[in-house]
Amino acid sequence: MAKKSYKDMNLYSCIVLNILASAMELDPQQKDLEEKLEMILLEEPEGLSKSEIMHHIRSNHNMTERVLKHLEEENYILIVKDKRSYRVLPTKQGLMHVGEFNKFYSSIYSRQIEDHYRYIGLPAWYRRYK
Image (cartoon, rainbow, N blue to C red; front, top):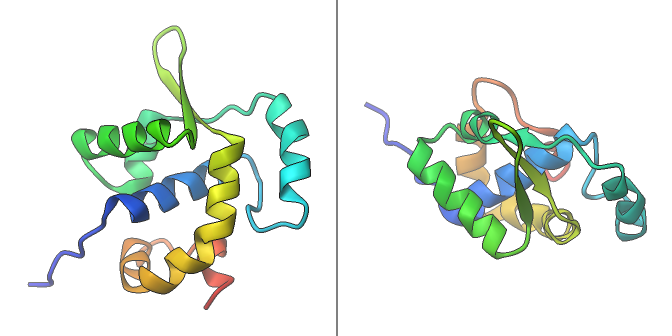
């Protein structure tokens, strides 16, 4: 039986911020990102639902809540309540953070990232550094 790979809060946070950037069709490593973000975030991105995030990180409700709470406390995301659901939106600070740290995360978590994406293919943000 294969040993289950442990994912810590930093790795989950990295995955969530990258999927939020991807949902916005945004490359967090692009040049002049900080200047572009002001205009991009004014367009009020749609964001993702909590269940979409739970699906992407392949975790249970409790871990998803912990990750989102952590990201919200760090001011990396906003959680907006709609009529019957929640939308998770990245903040400028969150998008800048993931743009700066993707190389670092991909180097220290390479085994966990490759395991996490083994059935669906490695994401572009990770492939850039391999």
